[in-house]
Every structure is written in C-alpha cells, then in structure tokens.
Image (tube, rainbow, N blue to C red; front, side, top):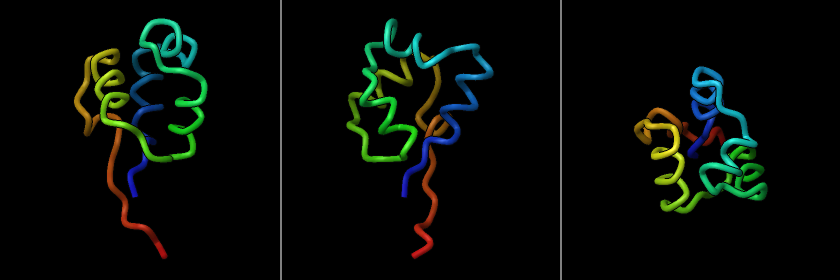
Length: 68
C-alpha cells in the first residue's frame, strides 16, 4: 500500500497549505481528499506534487505492506 504521510510532513516543513496546492500547483479538492485517504494517484499528479514541492517522490510517498 502506498501512503502519503510524508507529504503532510514536508508541506508543514515548507509552510505549504492545501490551499496553496490547489491554487498554485493545480491540485483539486478531490485529489487532496484522495491523498489524505491514501487512495490511488495518477503519476501526473505525483509529478505535479514533486515539482511544486521541489522534492523527490520518496519524500512524499512510501510503500507500507498491507497488514491484511
């Protein structure tokens, strides 16, 4: 399972809000909700996030083995 826990940490470190993501990076509300729920993301969305946050994919997402 891919989780986006690191995304919220890096956003806090950089002082970036979800409002900023929506307005400046073109990430819509639906996508923000999907990120919070660790749902599937398109690679173009991950690309937008990495570009907006000036980071690598591994800085915002990680694989965790599904407990079930």
